[in-house]
Structure formats: C-alpha cells, structure tokens
Length: 112
Image (cartoon, rainbow, N blue to C red):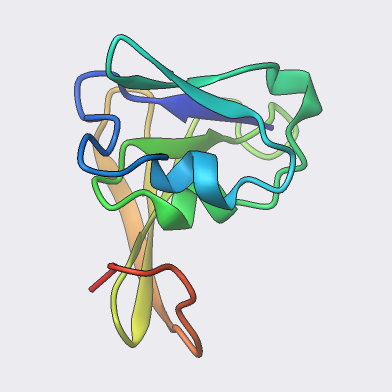
C-alpha cells in the first residue's frame, strides 16, 4: 500500500512546528516542502494509517493494492472526538462507502 497526499487539500499544518503527519509517523517519513507534506520513501511506509487518521484536512489516504482493489481505490479517515469516519474513495474521487467506528482514545492534540 502507499500513502497518497492530495496536494490541493494539504496545507502543511502551517501554524505547527511539525505537521500532524510528521509528528505521528513512527518511521519519520514525512517532511514539508513548499508548504506541503511530502513522503520521503513510500516503500519504507509501515501501513499503520497513523498519518491518515492524524491529518485534520483529510489530505492523506492509502491507495489499496491491486489484490484488494483493481480500481485503485483509496481509504481515508477523519478523526473526531468520539469516532473515526473511514471513507472508501474511487479513482475519480467519488465516495463509494463510509463507515464510522468508535474512537476510544485520541492522543493527537488539537483534533475535534
């Protein structure tokens, strides 16, 4: 799987010393360039989805591998105080389905 960054949506978390994705990534794979998040080396990604859940603008998603989705679907998440809303997005950007699960603990400061 690979993390996809929508550069039209990403604002680089400008008021923070590190973006949420930079701060939470256990592999330290993100940095900012020209005010946008950049993934250093996609092949080093652990597929933990921490960055996808941490992004307050839903600019990050995970591209599902061919074995799961021949249509290059992406999975994105929006963390709220008590829930996480996951969305499956097709290659055209249309939502296919969404589902909500409880968010037991949110350790990401500033998310609502």
